[in-house]
Amino acid sequence: MKDIALNEIHKNLNAKMVPFAGYNMPVSYEGVNIEHETVRKAVGVFDVSHMGEFLIVGENALDLIQKVCSNDVSKLVDGQAQYNCMPNETGGIVDDLIVYRFNAEKYILVVNASNIEKDWNWISQHNTMDATMRDLSDEYSLLAIQGPKAAEAMQSLTNVNLAEMKFYTFEVADFAGVNNVIISATGYTGSGGFEIYFKNEDAEEIWNKVMDAGAEFGIKPIGLAARDTLRLEMGYCLYGNDIDDTTSPFEAGLGWITKFTKDFINSDNLKKEKEEGPKRKLIAFELDERGIPRHGYDILDENGRVIGIVTSGTMSPSLDKGIGMGYIPTEMAKNNSKIFIQIRKNAVPASQVKLPFYKG
Image (cartoon, rainbow, N blue to C red; front, side, top):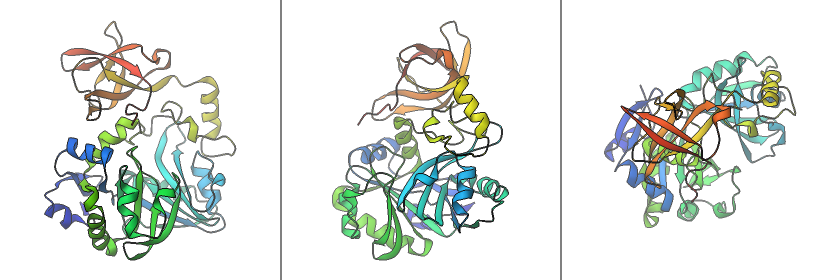
């Protein structure tokens, strides 16, 4: 198990620490519902330093990224970020990620913690154009400062006008007295905010200044459990649950990041799938009765036949009802149509709904 740079601080805050993707990570502090509400209404800070960062530079950097990624990275300008995925050769997804463009020959790819080694090997294997790659994952920490008060709470720490930063843009600037911090207007909660990347040696200083600056705005540390309920209320896919090596971008509703303006790995087969339509689809549902849907539960039709499986599910803190996502045959994926979730011995009725669950 690896420890993140702020491990001792989390332990001193009485965080419940759990093994996650090879790291000891804070899963909760006060409790998931309180932490969830803090992010929806004020501002919370997540330590997500387990995420991976790959630096790709050189005149062939863009060519390599275009080859392994489904979205069109050539559309980015300096200071822009882009949500993306890396298709495999069998119709599935190696990982979903964010691509940051610093300039025409410098990019950082931010990948999921559980996939760092797999992703590195995958990109390296396809680096036939000799772009220069460097794994920065063990050198950098990452705080996600999320919520409607995030910009106001953090403004005293930087000269960057946080309130005017557009979604999916970033700047490299001074933050909390530290040089060369990446301030990114991104996040995984649907409540606005920023993700801050910096060297491990600056982690404690930045954490303390973030907590001090945010104190009057009600800032609290938030664990991974609330990160999961927040992202699920928005219908954001979680790698390993809703997307994996067997799910295609079109099945997962990620056609919008799959651009056929260029060739990329498995693009011909994915283009064919788009034209023919996927055989199954990731749907969203709300339970009509009390209950909590969980990952791995069966989805049934009205005759009790198993038609799919729940990939993510929880009791929504904002909506106070059971919500989830899962795959079912495309012909059965219709808004407002009835399905049932097998929760222990009960087939609990549910309604298919449009995402996001949480409208804000």
